[in-house]
Image: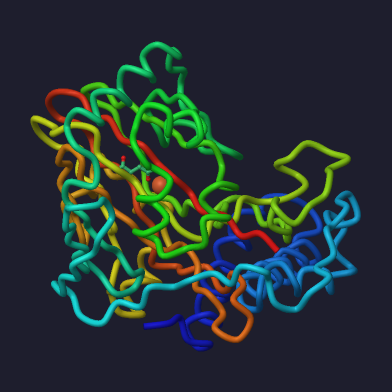
Length: 343
Ligand SMILES: O=C(O)CCC(=O)C(=O)O
Ligand SMILES: [Fe+2]
């Protein structure tokens, strides 16, 4: 299920209205609201065409003048991105990730495509990762933009190359699971290990974003050669897909929530119209999809579509909103791998 143009234009009106209300206390309201709405239209159009190519056409975008964009020399990337199309919720695909072992990739949702893979890591391997994170020392997880209070956790970053030394053929496992070229796995961001204590949570968000923050028509960071301003004003993170693995069973709570997965257009707009809907402390159990943490289980989903013609990253999948519900008892550990777009 894709977001249709009528969904987009309705969304445009909803967000435009929210912004109009938001700035109505300041002077020069009309001009600002017109400008804001045109920015919103640009933001949406940024996610409509292929993000990296089309953004170069936004020559009137002030923010872009601060950035030096990489030019794509070839229309098709050397390693086209793969998009594993889901066909039916509950469908189980047998896959070979490790020699002599069969894994099961189960479809949990279609929009966004969400898959669950039990025993992606063994309990010995999850213990190794937790040990490494504790030795590195975790620090409070940070957010881009104005996400104050929307996340309570600690994290540490580690490259997959380093983890490969302790965990046999880890890169290969991710490569086979995602069906992406090894190039993407080896050029991914550092992996993020996250620990939530009891009471920890992460309100819903897009891993590729920020969509809800004051609108900037920004290119994806991975197509920016350098920034002459700070990163947040220069570009935004565009992450094609997320592979998250639970490193322990949680005694109570700590589910991963996809509140609007596979919902209809009306529910989507209702959700987007109020930022308070993102609060999982109050809204966790209203979610259309909840995944319970289990040691070694991987959950994989797409934040963007892939354009079949070009093999490049396509639209943001609006329904990929997700987050971590409050840990009610015990602690919760996860490790994230994000796959970026590269030309
Ligand atoms: O904790 C979870 O279940 C979700 C974590 C998440 O969304 C993230 O780290 O980006
Ligand atoms: Fe996330």
